[in-house]
Image (cartoon, rainbow, N blue to C red; front, side, top):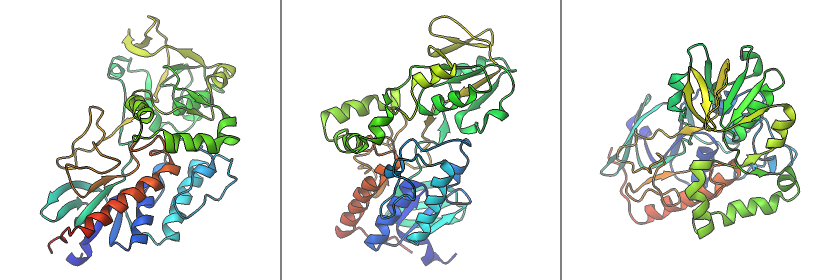
Length: 362
């Protein structure tokens, strides 16, 4: 590829909701940029999730900047509907997305960054990492002690109940994903769920008082104030609240709630109360861990998240993040909040450009 075509003001990593929102603001700013996406098609990350998955927020909060979501504002779109929306969004704003490109490394240079990819090396003044937080499935170390006859799946591998063999199923993790998978499986399997559920946001709050709730988590629960910082400190430990499903729904469906999974005993899962259960399948709905070691010199927290100030990495000028959990507020991860964070980051890039950051060498 022509060397000049590999030099940019900004390289965006990831064409999910965060990367496309960043692209929207970069386009408005008139910057030369490209968005790199590893999947062969925009939205494929969503298409690969379990068949019945619905978004955890209603359509009124599922739009990216400049394009409303084409659905009833109170409806919860399917994962395929949202994947198609992302594809339409990129087309609507003619965003320069290169699909099927894998990023190998990002390293600093005298004039910015060199982004090594499966399609060559790109040189750029700035990098926006919009790679999300779902890089590596998190599975308890005790999983290694379970009997080899137990089928173990991470929630990212689960697709539908018919794929699960006959016999009892244990879902480890009582957040929204775990609760929804357990509820679906309860119709065909005896199902257990292990872990302490996160707080539940009732449907009336989302549907009838949703505006007030959204303003609270978007504008009050931010790192700018003590309450937001307190919530942020525990966020990675507890996770997001239950949306659209409650423990009462699990109880009505016959899902048996168990304490936290703590160990393997005799090849079977054991729990904090000293009991154990014989199961045929274990589904780990235990979240993910970031994998960012391919960014040279990136400072990270004890949890593996990048150390940023509202998405800006002070130690690596020109490096930014969008779409990380509680990057600025509780809505930094959900779809409806990434636009604000993307705008903030792009404003920072423009300010940096005004201060005379040199162009990359050819």
